[in-house]
Image 1 (cartoon, rainbow, N blue to C red):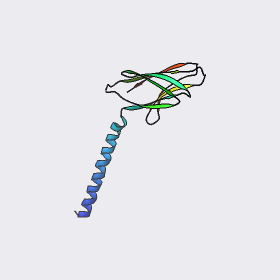
Image 2: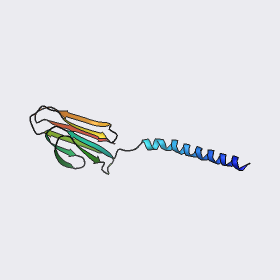
Image 3: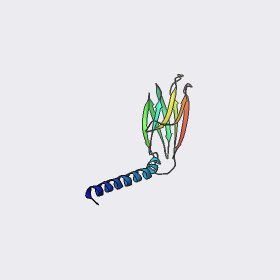
Image 4: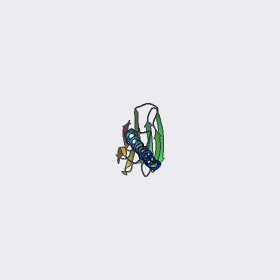
Length: 124
């Protein structure tokens, strides 16, 4: 067999192995777990919120605010957000939880004066 034919065979075999590896790994790569989410609270004025994951903590703000939440070590991840308007307007306060790519996992809102809204999302 000539050296050039041998080189072609080696190149084709390498490409075949690379394609096989890519196809077999693609299913594995699609099964990624969610390790970070974005919590957004949007209200034109003052608001207070309580976030419960493994622990509970308080947030307060003015206007639209975003936080990146990181998954705890446990397999199950539940996030509950309770937000309340601090005035008597009928403007909408919105809580949203979304993935990094923008896919919305949950949405809740209120227009009631001093209204409260709660959003719970279970993430796997």
